[in-house]
Length: 403
Image 1 (spheres, rainbow, N blue to C red):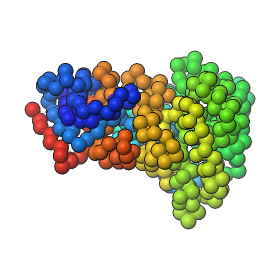
Image 2: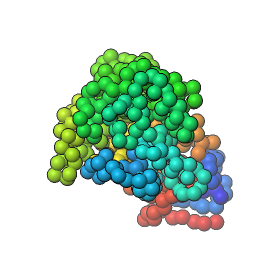
Image 3: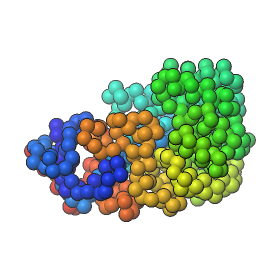
Image 4: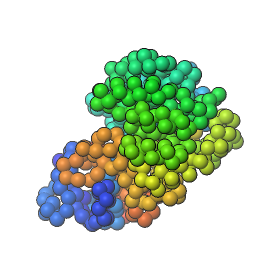
């Protein structure tokens, strides 16, 4: 089946200007763009007048087994793998229905995210493309230890890394510092050391995989960068030396501005644990400053929400993008961080992340122009993953004709 979208404004993700054009695709890939496909026949023609097409969005930091409750770590205690699997499936549906075609899941108990990825790939269920880390690797008692593999020293970390790769992880998630949600740990404190992080990065690289480090305090961030990490998650306390190191090594930053923002906005009145509120209030100002400093200096930024943390709901990716704009990032750069740059960070840019001939037909149609108002991404009209339509809403100006 061939589908053609006509009269649509296109943001292709490559840095080209917004253009009014025609896009032709089949059940998998983009066949052509522009004048050369205007006259070609299609089984379905969509009039895109008044709409903007962007590449399917990508959230580089989610937790599908957490649903944004006030205390997701506490809520997970005592839950079975089956409980988490149902929750992960529903959260995955919320993601793709909002236009997020690809998610990178960076931490789930019992490798539920790997199982869900396999179920989607094999056609058992439908959902977004998932890149899954499975259980994170943490030091004993480290941040997120309730859903992780605890490992101490190079040998134990290497064993844990190899175990996760054997179980099918697309990337390894490592905890380089403490964090906001875990009681009794300081976000500034280093946790896994450089040597431990380095051996995991080596194992991932040997297997052709990437790595992500939860890294909030500056010493832990530097340990992760020196170790060869692919992406620094959060990056709350960045100094000039850390930014220099990221630029030199090509390390990506995944800011997750929405995580502390939602905690501070809701606070204790909504039932968020006191330790999390206090730490979020303490770090949020530095987080925003570090984000802008990194952006201003040219660090590669890939968008990610930390969806699943308190009131940080799956399907609300746009809040993160709005915060990025609010804190100084240009609209075009924000859109690229959620498409092209995200794909590069996940090493899937040869297949997706931009709207180009020969790439997968991952497309999002929205009302309005997100280059002028990023919130237009909330006005979802159609979502395509590899040419298959997952969301289809009627719009006043839109006509669809079956041939």
